Image (cartoon, rainbow, N blue to C red; front, side, top):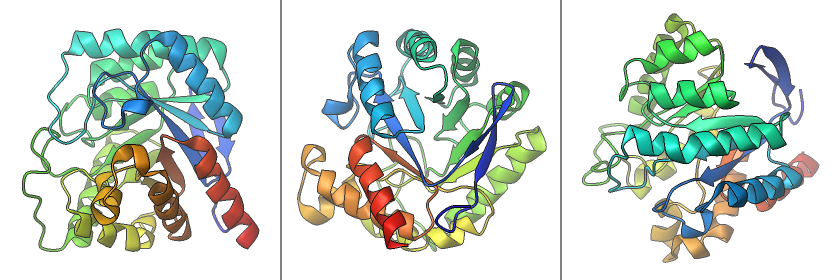
Length: 280
């Protein structure tokens, strides 16, 4: 145990690996339309160069996505998502075989192909609800699974988010989906409240303030706050100018019990981790 957080032991491609949280997950967007243009990787070579910098800065996980889930985004065809992601996963696994690679997808077919290519984790924004084969697929591959709360679907989720009690509803959803994942045979589960996915800024801050409640579900909590609208609506910034705000909220998330930070900028996130460790 470090910094009051218990170690995480995950089964990754047939081997048990121990991690000392908090962990930083670096985002590799293999897309032309992700909301933060600077994060878009235009080629396999560009993704490898970015990955090398992220790993050097301390990233424990690389999260590869080939279909933007920004508000208003439309569905990417399966063939295109595979075309974008699988060569990158193969190249990353070949060059950085000891690094945990996550595939960011809601499709079971993409998850399956990515794990065969070298991924060792699945990150699903729909918690298995957009492809009902996902839970059984992940269970059969014996890899960790990140399940996230989202109200609606990416194309419409920010039209009019509404909750009676956002914390209670998100906790209930995550608990129910974690049970479903466990019953399907998934051993290692991470929960993500889904900042910015069908939520207003007020909803997002209510969840951030109460991350400790989610932690009580007994699974590692992932916080994906990087450069999101909940920062920009308060500060009047755009994603390109939201690094400072991101670092502030990442620090709050760590103080409230987050085990994993999903970020575009690994070095500043690692600095927050190290400074909080020194703070005690």
